[in-house]
Length: 495
Image 1 (cartoon, rainbow, N blue to C red):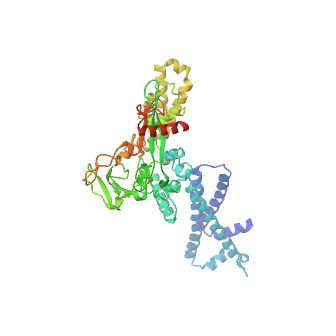
Image 2 (image 1 turned 90 degrees about the vertical axis):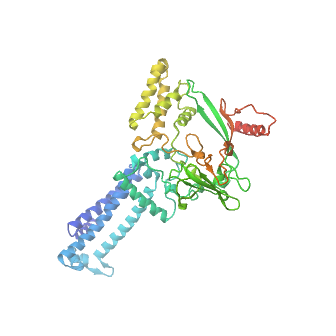
Image 3 (image 1 turned 120 degrees about the horizontal axis):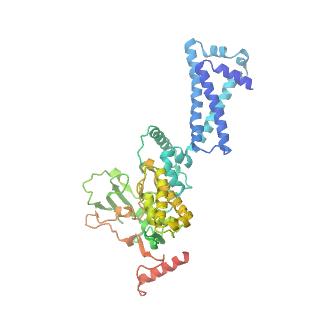
């Protein structure tokens, strides 16, 4: 069998172009088989190996096939011979002898054509599967996508494939994503991309097609208790709690209230923003019960011209704009590690000094990690030398956590620092809710969009010593006290 194959290859490689094509086809075919077996056995796991396996070698394989054909047509043109004469020149009479099923050469060509087609189909399907994997998206272009890959792995959606939100379903979405992917490869190759990379708001699939496969806005009802843990910048890193009763209802009919009121179909809210960041709202309008819209215009931006085609209806991502690639607020990040026990609260001023360490400007990632270590060690060696000697392991642990905070959120090579990608949830460290809920948004009757805190939540405690302490001593005869007592008791049962 091998002898016949070699004889056929010799007949096909009729000139230098054909020989080069045979070499490319054979070597890429064998290399693909070896690499695929190594991948299946777990020997190779790198996404870069995947790029070679599913993009480079298939391309060489196809190029080789074309070179064989080009070689034949080029030789035919140079010699002026017919295809039959060329076959007679390249193969012996035994190969060209005709039987009821055709000549042996015809069998070879048919066999190898089928092998090539099946091979290309399998490799193409494997290539598309590989290119749709989160690991490819996050690591193939390491320096560019590393920030998104790092935040993705620690997000609530780390088990959701990237393509489910960034590509979506259907042939049209697939074609658009591959064309966009080609441009991204060109941008990376020739360093044409922006740093930081703008959030691709125009390329995201509609929330109705992505988010709402798992989340159902109409079923958000009632309230939810949330406690925010905060540490002060004093020596004891004093812990305090703010407890909120979040109104997550969607609201229907006359009872139009709650945070998710904004995205129900009957309460449609539309707006136009200054740019794709959607942080400055030019006007917003709310659908009324009679089907009309009441518009609130930002009086500080009245001179800006807009097009009706820029109008957007609010959906999930207008508030949950960092639902997956979540960059932390520096202070909240340290508070969380203290609460989780990763940073020991007994270290004097660890909140204050940790905040200074992670927010200092560093030229690159390595300098940042070293700077954090030097800052924390230096502080305790100078101010608390005995503690630095006795509890060095606790300080080491705190430094490790602070370095993790820095590595997760700061990426100097992509110009990503604190606040680069702001979250629109809430209003702490972001304009968030106040993009629309502010006194500058005025309708034709002079009414403004309310910014009353109680629209979205009730404040049960504010920087209290315990998570269930009341803001003030309540009047036990007041109906609000009864509601708060019920919520408090409910909270204590689950705390």
